[in-house]
Amino acid sequence: IEDRGRVLALDREVHDVVGHGLSVISLQSGVALHLLDREPEAARAALEMIRRASTEALDELRTTLALARDEAVPRAPVSGLGRLPGLVTEVRLCGLPVDVRVDDGDGPSGLPPEVTPVAFRIVQAALTNSLRHSGASRAEVIVRHAPQAVQIVVDDDGQLAGTAPTADGHGLVGLRERAAEVGGWCRAGLAPGGGWRVEAWLPFER
Image (cartoon, rainbow, N blue to C red; front, top):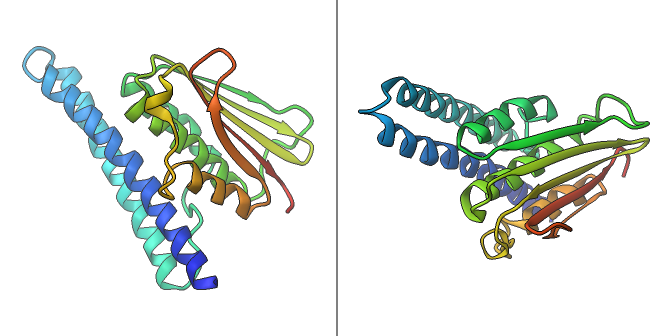
């Protein structure tokens, strides 16, 4: 059981790192090709984004695989909510406007070290799906701190058919597994105003 849990954790980590990185690279390479002759400076910016995304993905992948070789459960070793601004910038540069709202509420400004990487991966996966599948024209990320938990909400205005989670272990199932590891939950469904919502509740203690 322990070995299976380690394999599943590694599977989720590699999927999220590679999936997001390749999505950014694919979208930005299309931008670069479209603008190469007409707007070389804009094409240069897209190529720089490709370089940065590929470098970050490779660094995360190396760290994840190194932890796996040491027989430690790889749990987003270099990811946390501190990377949220950079993630949002990447998504915006790929053409999807994203609004971000962080509500500290009555909770602490920081999150436990085992919770913050899970929160980041949930936001990353939700925004990656919005980029790749939904045809969304906007997205919103809400991080709401409660006294002993953090709530994550990611909405977009895309089509249900494009953003429906899959049951192959890499969609909503993978996000549910991440949340369950820290005693929380994650679900997805129609947003109140239309579009798609991914929501998670992550307690600070199991």
